[in-house]
Image (cartoon, rainbow, N blue to C red; front, top):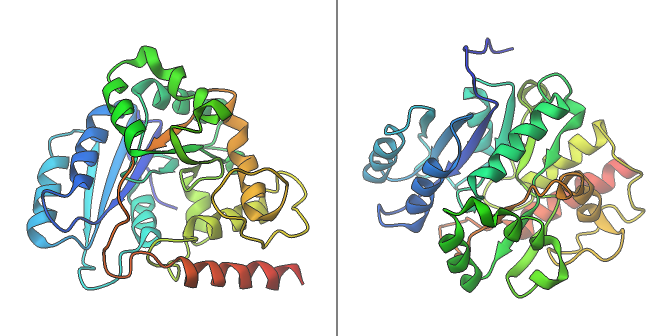
Length: 292
């Protein structure tokens, strides 16, 4: 068990990143996050293999903020791995609670205050079984531009939090995910169970594999009969497949107005980034083997 440094932070937010140029929009999004997330959180930025010049720029950006840690992984010629980056961030955390937060996620400052309140209410530092997911609204390009205009205005928080989960928001969204990769959990429990499975490298299913193991340890309800079915990222209408089960860990906080948005970006073209076919096939084999 890691000896925690003295800190007043509620939780550690882990943000993986790999950028290819200093002009990549992911760096702009990171800078926006660093000035938006309140000081009650420690932020850990893990650079998984950006080129040297870009990594130096990332280090300079993070050095401007007191509660931000930066770590560069020497993985330039390896496939980008969200799992590897998240594990490194969790190991570095100086708080008992970690939040896995992609660089494209964001919320108004008051949303993060709600998240902090919920972490304390659940006493996640002592009760790992009370982990939860933060629902994410994946915005269209037009809605992304609208949200960024509203971002400085905390008074519009509920317009973007409660409203995202309603049918009326469908024109704003590509999709809405309740059981998201933005998992809020006990750090020591994560490490004791092996963290994210790093064999799920690239992008795809690494979050679901972790949620599967958490769900096995801390079930929230009886699993659907066709649990291993991947129903896709659209609207969940029936209790079928693992996505419907994992959504239950996010539904708990919807009534509290706890949601983040995913800012629109074109499909990323980094080598080997999308590994959905391979990773989801691997996840299906795991789920089916454990059901036998």
